[in-house]
Image 1 (cartoon, rainbow, N blue to C red):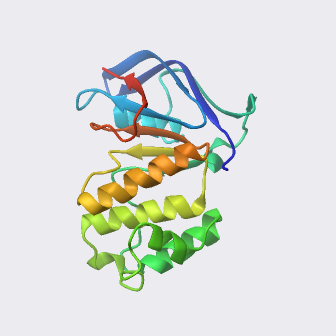
Image 2 (tube, rainbow, N blue to C red; image 1 turned 180 degrees about the horizontal axis):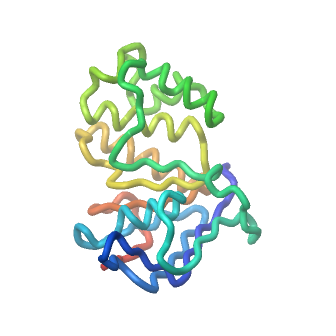
Length: 201
């Protein structure tokens, strides 16, 4: 069971350049739930995820990550952010990438166990630079699962995946939620039944 972390946003506004993407947005993502961020392209879905991850400052409003009602002073240590870029080192193998992440971020699972969970055992010793976009995506999810952070921020999590990869990732997301994890995902599809929906426009 992962530590239950709640993500709360109040009165959030986001500006990129001279354009106000959204304003007065509220968010409440509780442990054991998936919140799907939906809206047209350019509406600010990725910007909201980056805001929660601490990579983008809100124009207005507050964001809080809390455990048991107590705000965490180092929220970044609770997050796994998986955006459009997978942050994998192309010259390193899949296993080496995960071993590097384990040394840097810590890990609750073994790298080989994580790669097996995403169907990447056969590719474990190949340089990531040779991987397809789908294989890179699986490897990035293996890293996220290995590190074991309670809050997952996912930007179009099933993009570039074939049917088997999509099924593996959706199963992983469902298992994380069932284990008490908090998932916030910008997505155009239903990832698990009963997900909450947050629309940005």
